[in-house]
Image (cartoon, rainbow, N blue to C red; front, side):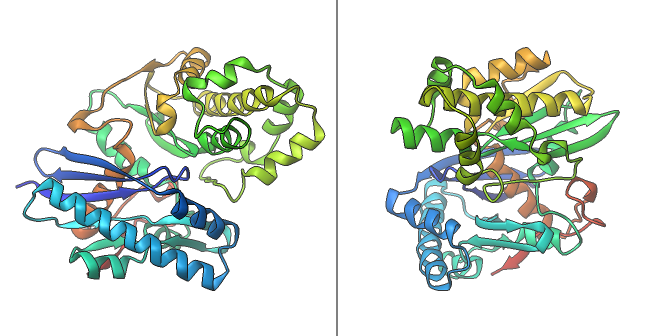
Length: 358
């Protein structure tokens, strides 16, 4: 008998809280997906918290607001679904600081309080439980990506173009997954600061600009791109301060040149990662907000010669894939299943990912 699980995801863009209701059993299915917009005032204090994650009062106040928003959204979602039972909810938290080398991962949204307010079993701390056995706490969604392909005739490579890009692929039948570098996070930041837009729709702004080749070469010389997996990254590394270094060193003709160069950084870093991985299959699926950017997709496909797959099984799509990943991870933890292939994150052994709050 299929059992219901909910996955929650909020990316670095903070545009919405995504909830996906999935049933897992002999047949798997996404039953319902909904995005709840995050109001600007809440976005602003979350961003402040990211800048000062160790400020105890700021964190406490922000955590309280985030917890309330998540609990209310979850209640609305369950009512909307009209389902009678939910086994568990997978909630990875909204990250404000992640430094796996120091075994630090701080997230917003108190799972214990969310469980108390909703009456639902909440499974959280996915990153922390991975880090306890030597892992980096990311990427975790590729475990679900691998599970999807186990039902397909051939492996489906997946590029998730969220705030940061991550690749899931197979090379010589070995699973490989890691963060390739920045994606929407820097592009969106430039779009907001210079163009007063939330994002660059279909790369329209980038297409108007001339790429600063010298700046691009310098950006690509960052040591992160030469690191071997397992590796993960985020806004702690590739942020506005990182970008400011290049703005000072190189003259950008105009704001269009800046966004064109940073967009090209995403295209090249993703394409290079695919080339280095020597992947077995030519099929690739684009997920995350960047999957809507036709310019980035077209350029990656042109550089790599890959074939875009536009549909996944079970009703999965570019919008619900990441939230559904955490519904699946919640199912694995709730049923006591170990997650193997610890080499993806650098974990020393198979482990149960997540802590249970009820």
